[in-house]
Each structure stands twice: as structure tokens, then as C-alpha cells.
Image (cartoon, rainbow, N blue to C red; front, top):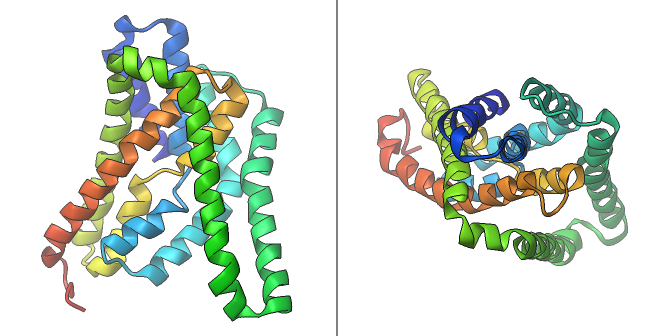
Length: 258
């Protein structure tokens, strides 16, 4: 997916729509979409898989693998694909971003869970602490989006064509990657409940991490940050559509009633 996102960002933002954008805009928007594509989803994918009636155990395992993969591969892939696209970013800055926005929350979450269960018990953790932490994460994301819209809202309102260009690149990537994975799972004769988590994870993005890294590298008012915000606006409705399509076509999979 990171490579297809870089490909479609180049195809649409440089080749197809390049004559309508300045070189700086092209660089910024491509950078944002690449940062979006490099981050595999580890949050909303649980919601999409649940709505699509996927195997939640399978989804959780893949989500855990994605979280660990991001720790190791996010920075190298981001630097590689940005470099191929002619966008130079300092290694130390992106490594620091990964440490702050991926490694630190991962370690903090593990230690918090372990300490709380040891002191309060599993039941208290699941019934009291976990729901409240979920609310905090949602509120933090909303605050981030509000700040970004303060800086980027005028572009979204006054220049919808630019938003449309970015949206098209992201939309095509989601559809292509999801479609390839979904069809491959069908050809391999996987059960629907096992196939749909793989397709959803393949198509979705961890836009929270992408937003954080883009604002750190390029600034909150940058075109890269705008591209990640467009990613949020694009992904939610398209993933709901893909959930509906998946439910409508699950009868084509073997053992779909199991």
C-alpha cells in the first residue's frame, strides 16, 4: 500500500493535475498522501471489521502486528518514498516523530495496562479505565482536527478543486488496494470472516499518525497537513461504503454463514 499510494500521488498530483498546481504544492500534497499511505490502520479498522462482521480475533492479531511493524518500518519507508518523490526530510526528525507518536504511546499503553491490572484487576481495567481512555483519545483527535481546520479550512472552502485532486489520489488507492486484497482472498477460498479484516486493513490508513508526523515535519499550515486532513474526510465515508459492499457480496465466499 505505501508504494501504491506513492504511485497514485505521482500519477494524479504530478502527471494529471500537475499543470494546475505549483511545484511547492505538488511536493507538499504528495508528501502528505505518502505519509498517509505508509501508516497502516490500527484503530478504526476494529470498527470497520466489526461492522463488516469480520473475524475480530484475526483483526486484533493483524492490528497488533501492524503496530509493531510501524515502529520498525514507518520511518525507513517514509524516508525512502519521500526521497524517491524528490522530497528530502531529515532522518532524525522523522525518527523523533515515530518515537513520540508511535513508540511512546505503545510503551505507555503496555505499562498502564500491566500496572492497572496488577493493582486494580482486569475487571476494573475493562469496565472503568479502558472506556474513559477511549473517550480521551477521541477528544484529542477532535482537538487536533479543529486546530488543523482553523489553518486549512479556508483552502477546503475556497479551493475545493485542490481538495478534489487530493481526494481522488487517496480514493483510488483505497479502492485498488482493498479490491486486490478482497479478490485475492476470494481466489484463495478464504472464509469471508477471515478475508474481510485483511482487505479492510490493507485499504485503510492510520490518519492520526499521518497527521501528527505531517504537522511535525512540515507545519500545521502546510499542504502536507492538508493532505492528511483530506485523508480523514475521504476514508470514513469510503470505508463505510466498502463495508456495505463487503456485506452485500459475502455470499460469494465459502462458509460465509459460519
